[in-house]
Image (cartoon, rainbow, N blue to C red; front, side, top):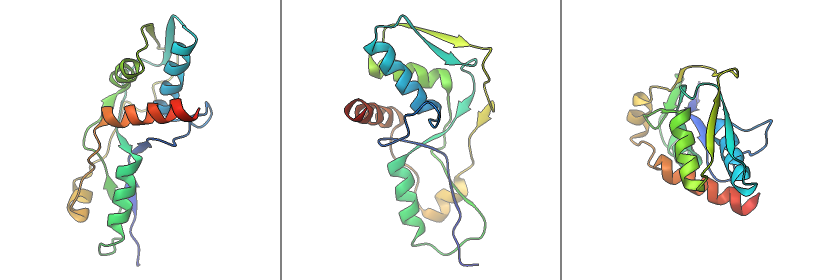
Length: 153
């Protein structure tokens, strides 16, 4: 077969989906914190315990991986593209809260589902095949995403 099968981690970045029905956790949290700050709300409710770990890949890094894949030999086996580090939902909440400058309380709601406890991928094979790994710092990527959201929503 003449194919390349890239598997990208959870994607985020400018232009992401910011609708309640379609957003990943990161986009949904950005919406919640922006609205809480705009409306001077005393707290933001976050689903679950905050403990699950997710891996996030900036859209620009995902695009770079796809472009690089155009120039490699074909592979039937999947090629994972990852940043190599997961982050807990609670750590992500703290980053988003800080960047937005929200001063209110965070209320975890353990009655809501956490989902999978640990969701990252082994991308060492992908790094080797593509001779590259993602470069965008997570905090800078979130800042860029928030800036885009504030400008467009």
